[in-house]
Structures are given as structure tokens and as C-alpha cells.
Length: 198
Figure 1 (tube, rainbow, N blue to C red):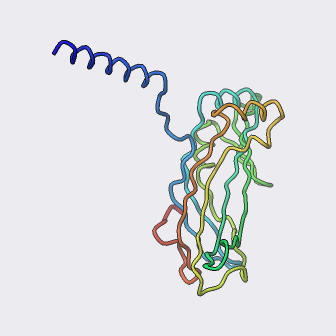
Figure 2 (figure 1 turned 120 degrees about the vertical axis):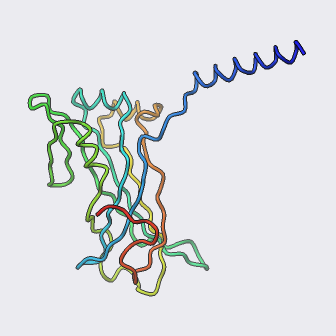
Figure 3 (figure 1 turned 180 degrees about the horizontal axis):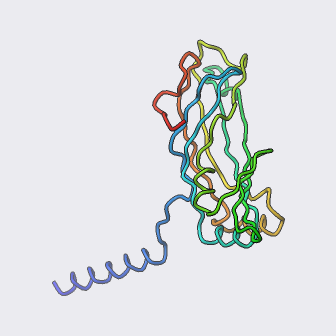
């Protein structure tokens, strides 16, 4: 009986040790929902993510390091006789920076630039991809069913070399959501079961 109690005590101590040594961390980027909507030129994507920065990334951006993010979209068609055919593979790039003189955060994508008073506001806008033209007319057939997928990731390859070296061995610099997958039929205006905000 005394042996059993001692064994239970040892196991409890080990469990506490491992929980403290290896804390479970929530994903810093998560893909929540997505939809493809018909447009004049084909189909556009709207997607919702959750993007939070860990302490190291938040310190980096506040010290003037530009963080580069990429939203990746892929569309594939299944083929029974060969590998799946990749119809579309696109990335939309974002840059998140902090300007000490104006004390504002800046989010840029292509020619579009927005400024925000707080990091939370900038991340909230980064988390909502809207009206991104991803499929052109003529790229897909109306009678086919495709597999659409989207994710968002931090892209250290766009950063200075010193940060790229650090990113190879440090999980803090390797943030990516899981791929969000859904079946897409061109005859429907929205991705089935993947409704999100517009």
C-alpha cells in the first residue's frame, strides 16, 4: 500500500515536471473559414484566420523588424489515372512593420498600405483576406469538382539573412496555419461548408 502511494507521488511529480518543461502552446496562426465567390473575372477568395504574435515576434516588430506573411491558395483536380493536377497555385504577400516616429503599425500588400494605432488592429485586418482574385475565367470546367486549400504563414525567407539563419532552428520564426481544405464546384457560388464573413 505504501509502495503504491509512493509510486503515485512519483508519477504525479513527473507529470508536473513535464507539463512545466514542455508547455502546450496554441497555434499562432489558424485558418478558420474560407469561401470562393463568383466575380466578373472568375472567382475570388475570402478567408478568415486567427493571427497572433508570440513574444519574440512582437518584440522584433516593435524594434523595427518587418514581418513578412503569405496567404497561399491552391486548387487541384483529382485524376484517377495520374497524380492530382494543380490548376492554381498563388501567394498573396503582406508586410507588417512598426514606425517609431509616428507610433503606428503599418500593413502593406502590393500597392495597398494601411496604418493602425495598435498591433491588435493591424493583426485583425491581416486575419481577414477579402476579394482576392484567385481563379480566372477559362481556368476551370463547370462540370468538375476541385479541391481548394488555403493557409497563412510567416515567411522568414523574405527577411534579412541573420533572421533566416535564426528561423532554421527556432520555432518562434516558423509560424504557419494548417491547410484549410474544401471541395469546390464551379456551379456553386460559395465553397460548401466553409462560409465566412465577407
